Image (tube, rainbow, N blue to C red; front, side):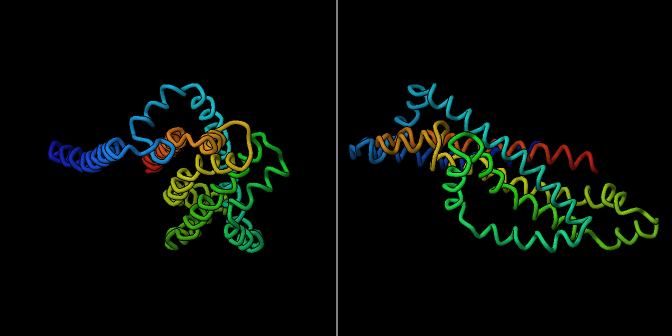
Length: 254
């Protein structure tokens, strides 16, 4: 049975891979046969060449973006957990702050980024803040939702045992909210690298966003595609890391 399940998983994973490869081949053939200029649509092989020819630039800019994304993501997690805990322990705090946070999410990040550049300059700080602002709310709302939707029978059981609010949170609310928390974490992980890149578009000296803008201005679309591929790959890596940590953490809780 296990072997059959493994074979089915392999088959299911092959379908999208084969489809993707077929699409790449079609793309390559159309570009080559129709002699489409590279500044309009580069062929997949031209994009792959960028990773070899411009490796150093891609490496330096990728490190900058990943640094911003990682720092911002970690700070967003810490802030989300802190705010969620405060909201649970101090209901009036939640009533005051939560509606403001909801409204803040209606402001387009593309409008906030230029202000951050003006206020904090062209260094790393505004990009990190942009990542924090993008990732913070999905994590917070998932964590708070997990705390609020715990079965009342469990809460009543802890009350009958005269458990303190702190003990109830540590031994019941926090572990039970972990599943929702990681769901929000996974959503935010998909935005992390993108948020850093968008912030770099609007002002910066290094990073994949800066690399994209400069490549676009030079009509080097092969480099634009190459940097976009890196953004996608590292976004998926962030999601994969979160998924791996989730499995370990939830198994430990169980």
